[in-house]
Image (cartoon, rainbow, N blue to C red; front, side):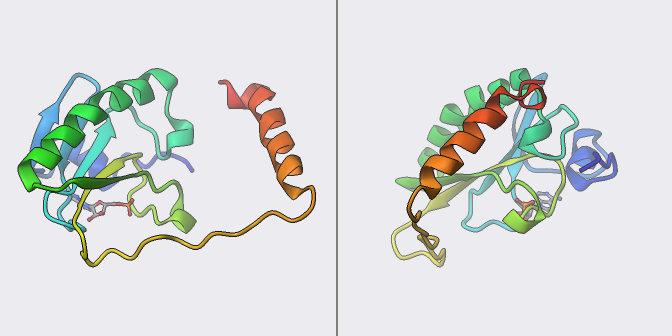
Length: 146
Ligand code: AMP
């Protein structure tokens, strides 16, 4: 998907609308989700313009990834949650509504309102090997390493 510079997280990055920021670096920003699944739910975004994780340069992804353990520890300490879900919704069918890549850090509590687990399928016959092979070949294709 083409990057829309008017998306709400781009506007937060430009300072056009406010956000409850908890951490900012030269390359990333973490702030509270305004509609938290549970209170303390954080969003972490790279400053690079990328609609989805597939569009993000490796270095920008690595920078966000390196911030995640510290942010997880802070959310656990601040909320008292023992458990967290770290989620990236990639594309609309996966639930992405804001088209600037973001990581959710969601504190979880026993008996909270979140429904989990999601459903599981199974592979028939040689389907699993075929899928393994398709993904392995796609990893070697030039477009996957750009
Ligand atoms: P997703 O569905 O993965 O694209 O998640 C988008 C998230 O952004 C949702 O959880 C929203 O509650 C959150 N959100 C939308 N607008 C804002 C905003 N202005 N500040 C903080 N969080 C927001």
